[in-house]
Length: 420
Image 1 (cartoon, rainbow, N blue to C red):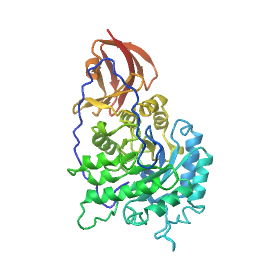
Image 2: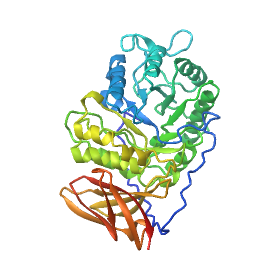
Image 3: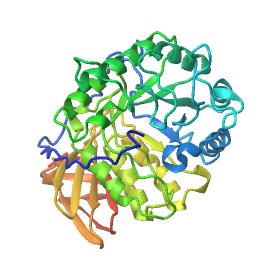
Image 4: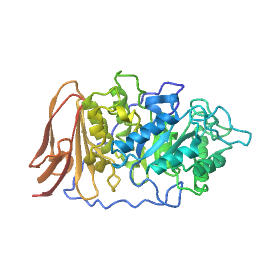
């Protein structure tokens, strides 16, 4: 979440169109340097899990969090990698205690945060929590900045926190500093506090989202990898509102994220916000598309839904192990946009073993037969084995990949082959 008090700015992001020309590419995994919040590299693949915000907002409670954690386990999603359970804004009381520590709202979280961390860990899950780099959170609760970064980091470590989502509402800008300098200083202070906490804690940075539409947006994204492992760079996905469509929101977030390929690598991930597939507001095809597109973009796969009430189509897409493997590929390469027009996009993602994942999005309101020539994805004159990641079927293809793609659907293949 970011800047909830105001409407997000709309930014047209121009995707970088990359021609992949080599028929066989060297794709050895990138070696990540020690990360910003630990001497040990963290998040070498995109984080996966669940967060309450887009479905429950400030109505979050201990019961909601534990019920969704239990559902991750019982559905088998936790075993597939959805293992980090994060409590978002509004979990605390409106003021710190007399000693300056954050306090869990006793009506919402009667057992407290240390208990919740232990509960999640006993289930084999990881514990994520929310705070803000400013003086108060977006919901008006106590923030960590500018004087409580060390105190809060120590408390998070003592509670068993594994993942911190640090928002950027209400960051003060001292006289003589630019807004970017103030944000960078605040996030660096939190990263330093986490390093000194004695616990490895992944840091999700929200700073770029507050610069979306400004000339220094790319600059903020560029330094975000020095303080955290992933970053929200734009508008939130739309909140749950029954069956009201959220497809436009998904497409907007996809649009600003798809051109940021150069910023992604192991331990450094562009985050276009939550997976809402199967949670209301998306059709079955739209639910499948979001998972496919996020996987192609090496995005964090963080659900924000009532897990026990996901649609069957949404649950099947979220749990698709072939797509999870594309997202979690150890090369850590975000897909490039090989072709784009008003009706479709073609994405190509190089994988660690030399394969490629290829996806084609149908933007239109009707079914289209879409064909992707091999020359468009860097395989001219090649014969490939193509696995349809929705059906699981594998076949030979000789000059192009082709599929009948429903409205707002996305066809996706994993291809391997040799040039002839």
